[in-house]
Structures are given as structure tokens and as C-alpha cells.
Length: 352
Image (cartoon, rainbow, N blue to C red; front, side):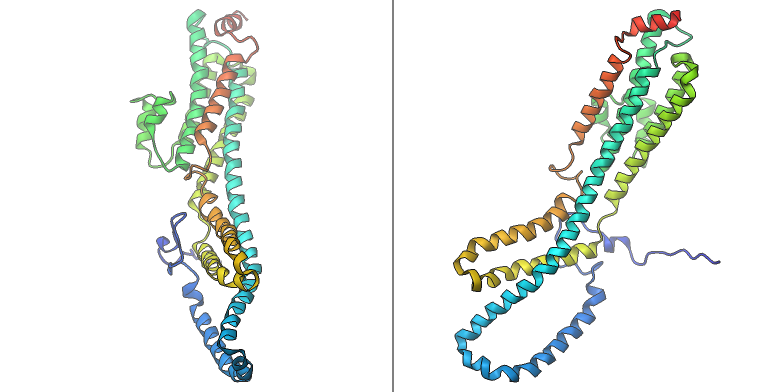
């Protein structure tokens, strides 16, 4: 069997668009080049049908008078609005369902990253409780305390780097100000050299250091294999969830779908005032803006607010995500095991 590599034709920029920008007059990447000929043939055939039908209704049309013919134009718009309401409601509802499911799934992925971090922090608090075998007394206690803090710092660093990647920023100064990174350190220099988001690297640093601290005797040997495996699994899960977030953000809803939807919504909103007047007259004045708010509002909701929750103020508060996660992990480090005291517990463990 011969496998042929399939290359997507055309340049990728032809199918890219900026979130929230209008696509109404966009041609490249839309359905217009694909359907314009069929649409033109449909218009020509409709014109022929009009020429055939017009003589049949000529007597009825002339009997209406000039004023009556103008009224018929309004009623035609009313019927057109009725036709469009059904299928526009369907495609708009389907589109917003897709956009909201993307938004909600990204929220779940953020939560999964936090859960993986907290699960790992719980294991740090429970199992990293012995001073290094090469140190004792206050020095061993301090080394143990610093090791626990260092591991929790790397967990928070991984989450922070993942959230920065979602925001399309790389702000090492902010990480340094939060105590997650030391300026000029080997970690800082490595992150500056990376051409990609560094969350996977930060999680790898955590795994490397957890093995190092366990080898120094900070974890009981009988738990090392299972605990370190669970930590690796949790951090692989966190890293995979962060990659899924990037996939969602880098793969937009197809431009052609957004374009045809915007075109239909715009046509609907334009004919709405004329279509509502025959039935509602003056009541159409307040009703038309309400209809516009509903259809165009839901369109903008899907294409602007829900598409990327990391670019708008109405999106995810990732800073609060990180703050709450760090508070939880710090609480675990201070209070687990129960009655935790770095000096007292380290001394008790060394005596054992």
C-alpha cells in the first residue's frame, strides 16, 4: 500500500482571522469562491421565473395601485423574515453550542491542571517528611523545609507558564515577582532560551528534583516507587491538559462557518425593521432593537466573548486560579502531617 502525504492547499493565512473582527467583506477562505457560480445561476433562473410569472399577476398588481404595491413590498419582507428566522435560529444555536462547549472544556482543562498540582502537593506534604540522611538537627530540618517549598514552587511555576502561554505572553519578570523564579538562575536562563512555552520543562524539573530529594532520604524507601510514579502520572496529566488548551486556542472555528453566519445575521438584522412594520407599525420601533440584540448579540457572544476566554476581561481570571492554588499548596505544606513542625517532625524522623 502506498501512503501519500496530504498537504493542505493554499497558505494558512488565507484561512486565519482575528477574533472579533468582521468577516462580512472577506472573500479568501470563505464559501464565496465555492458557491458563487451556483448562486449566480440561481439568480438567473429566478429572474427567468419572474419574467414568466409577472404577466400572470399583472392585472392584480395594477389593481393595487401605487400605494398598494408599496405595501406589498413590506409584506414581502415580512414573509422573508419568517423564512429566515427558522434556519438562522438553528445555525446560530448550533454555533453558540460549539463556542460554549469550547469555552467550558477550556475551563475544565484549567481545573484539571489545578487538581493535578494539588494532588501532587498532597503527596509532597505526606511523604517528604524526613531530613536528608547526610544532615541532621536544624540543618536537616531546614533542608527538608526548603525541599518541600522548592517542589511546590515548581508546581506553581508549571501552572503559571501554562496560563501565560494561553495568554500569549512570556513575562518572566512577573514570575520572579511572585517568587516562582530566581533572576539569573539556571532555570531562568533555560526558560529565556526556550522557543516554546516552558510548562512541560518546569514539570520535568519537578520530577527530576523529586527523585533527587527522595534519593537523599527525604522519603521513606518503601513508598518511593509508588509515590514517584503517581507524581509522574499527575504531572503528565497536567502537561497534557495544558497542551490541549493550546490546541483549542490555536485551532479556531473555521473561517467559512463564521463568515456565512455573520452574513446571514447581518441580512436578517437589516430587513428586520421593514419586515416588522406591517404587523406592528409603531410597536416595531422598540421591538426591532430587541430582535437585533437577540440575534446579533448571540452572534457576537459566540465569535468574540466565548471563542477565547484568555483574551478578554470577561474570560478566565487565571491570576486568581494561580493564587488560590498556591494558597492551597502552601496550606498543605504547613499543616500536613497534622501538627506539622519542621524542627519537631524532622527530629522525630531522624530518631526513628
